[in-house]
Image (tube, rainbow, N blue to C red; front, side, top):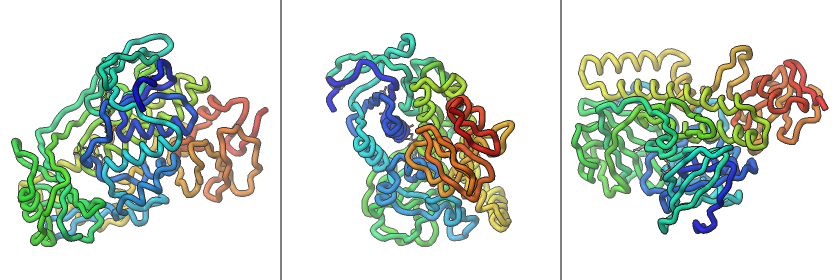
Length: 479
Ligand SMILES: Cc1cc2nc3c(=O)[nH]c(=O)nc-3n(C[C@H](O)[C@H](O)[C@H](O)COP(=O)(O)OP(=O)(O)OC[C@H]3O[C@@H](n4cnc5c(N)ncnc54)[C@H](O)[C@@H]3O)c2cc1C
């Protein structure tokens, strides 16, 4: 798409076509919301960065119609294992989690972006590539965004809402004057996607502890293995022999004879732990790494960004159609910022455990993990947490509101709302936003948001008041 067709007005301007921006753009296209998505790069960046899609993200990606193709492209990982060389300490299996997707999908971020982009095109949307945001000014009732195209020409796009999906160094965040407090722990990681000529046959993502430091290994499609290792300051991006050495000294016996035949990519990176002071400032929103960044341990970052997009998309839709009051838009920050803060605490703890080198402490850690693994329910609880199925938003007066409903109960269709009725309950006339289903697993009507979360009564009244009433025991059409 050439930039001469760049619109001058839009309801939503999305800046950045990484996984978060593409998820938001595909969602808004499906919801029929006019938007423009710009991306400074000409194509999805090579290199894999995130190497896994969590079940919770797959549940949303299924709603926007892109999970099947991603699953076909990827490998079904079994979950996470923690070992000390050849000693198994604890294993968090995804086999029995309550999701239609009981696996960790191993797939490169680049391929995820390609498939999301294709889905966006199929739905009728497109990314304006080689277009960079350089300025943002308030202009009632939205913002005037100045962008530069690949020829260096400036254009102004007037947008009612602007969403910064533009990554850790977000221009939207900077131009909006939003703080990004946090820290950058003094820890360097080497990362490589390597071909090792032979399959390990292991589809767990494995944290290996050793006297030489921490190593994470994970299979990727195409016979590749992802290798991430804590390395001393000043270490350059690993070459073939460095990756072989990391495997030999830090992994189990399986890696002793491994021959690293080529590297698809290799780099070093430094972790930052930050959350933006607010994820909403008037008509400007931050999503994904623009809003939060943390250690990639546990494969959470990209997934959290896609779920931010899931949380925001339907709220923007109702804001554009005039139904969502300010509180609905405010709930994006109220719901998602605590999730990001919790994630930083969780991934920081994972990294602390993984990078212990002092022998006594390492032995204590290992014994504690083994003991935890033997306690019934602990590994399932951890698998639920890592797969992000436990993420919800508590509600003061309703224990169900804010929680995720298993899609096997809800049977979602696209990004419609779902009214789940107890088996045998009378079916009212519902607004066209809803699909209706029945389930033996609910004892009262439940309205489920397009992001799979049970809505509270106030929200239903705010958005559909006068049309649908859910009074706790029955659902009824009120017009
Ligand atoms: C080495 C590494 C390994 C990782 N491993 C994992 C993992 O295993 N699991 C996981 O979940 N996460 C992982 N992550 C994190 C994951 O890569 C990020 O969380 C994810 O890329 C964030 O997606 P995003 O869409 O928010 O931002 P990004 O992917 O950063 O996308 C932002 C986009 O905005 C564009 N952009 C920036 N500025 C502008 C501008 N002014 N105008 C227009 N466009 C702009 C950029 O070109 C970019 O394409 C890893 C990250 C790294 C670095």
